[in-house]
Length: 299
Image 1: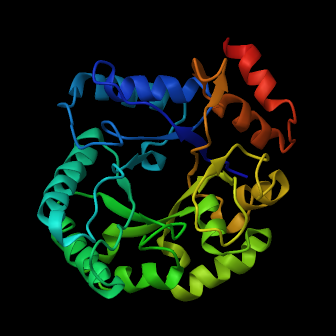
Image 2 (image 1 turned 90 degrees about the horizontal axis):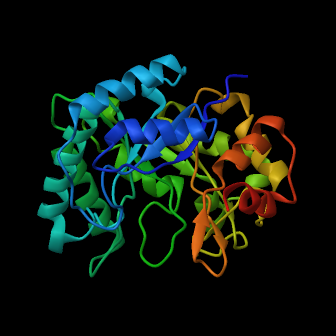
């Protein structure tokens, strides 16, 4: 099976995309996801095109297909909120252009949250925003992420996502990113992933599934809390996640880890788990000593 596996990596102004590729390779990954700036804000530095060309060569040399690389939009952008709708549209237009300049064709977006508006109004705002953003000449797809349903989040069900997707004019530029923690927390039983995929196919269409975020969950099904856990250490469990990862129906879809960093000495230092989680996934063998092994490796 062609396993396309990676994780969230950093993107720094000085090293640009090149630094992101180098970090991904240090985890033995063959794809990755990054924010083009801090996820908590919309401050963005100019793109170093020389570093981008170096990054593309490094990807080519290490069998990383740039078509499997993902950009994630910052959390604070909210197309559902009429109070900052114009700003969100303007920023996301720029972010799509940044993706194009970087050579990335997939941008994951949290659909938004209904702030002082009804769910129906929020969904209409998202549709309106997406149609404005995607009216361009760039081959960049926006992937709406499945959400846990925390607060007034939009995207807590496949039906809700489909109510947005079906109204998007540029159908070739819209897709879905499925998050395993989020769908569990939203009420989907991931222990039978084939049933979930069948439901997804009936409601949205499997051709729209273009990325999977691989996260275990700290919470029980239907908790609507959205707290990620390391692979095999949460309520989803290692075996269930392995069945998802190696499901033939999603074989060619990039799978991205967003699991928590490991705290060391009361959070004085934190270590990425991805090298070791990817090793577990490739070997299909759970490592109960994961935390200790990561700390010993990095400290």
